[in-house]
Amino acid sequence: MPKCDKAEVKEASNDVRNDGTDTNWATFVYDGSDIIVGASGTDYDELQEFVKSNDDRVYCYIRMQTGDEMSIRMKFAFVTFYGTSVSPISKAKCSTDKQLMSSLLPHAINVVMEDTIDFDEILRQLRKAGGANYDAQA
Image 1: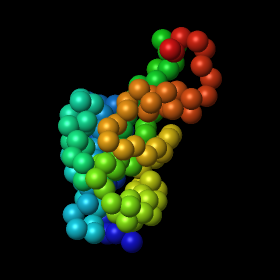
Image 2: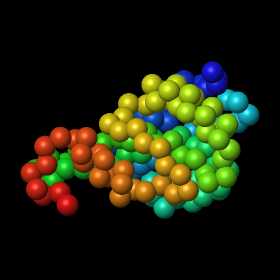
Image 3: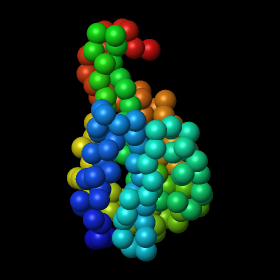
Image 4: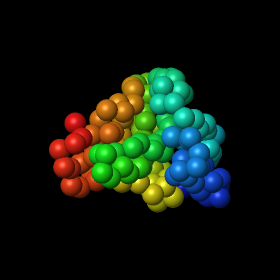
């Protein structure tokens, strides 16, 4: 089991969850066998740049707005990202480590993505997980 500073993870996730900040995402990366807070930001394109390396294994915590004009809600996604060059052994290790990270980050959906993060797909899944859709959402 990897080591991670649960207080730092909670602090980073609270920043993403806080409606008083503009932070929309945070990442958690490997430092040897430990998992540490990587980066955070407001722009989803910045996150895409952060995970563009082909040999990255990154856990992402993402906040997105869902709902319609009657009910705007913030929903949270936990994304496990693998670059295209990550070995099968590293992917297998990452898949067991993600249980720890998933337990620390409250989220509506848990997805795995490779090569790029598909924000449209994340939003689609968050809307689906959100339940009732009164046709105001695309």
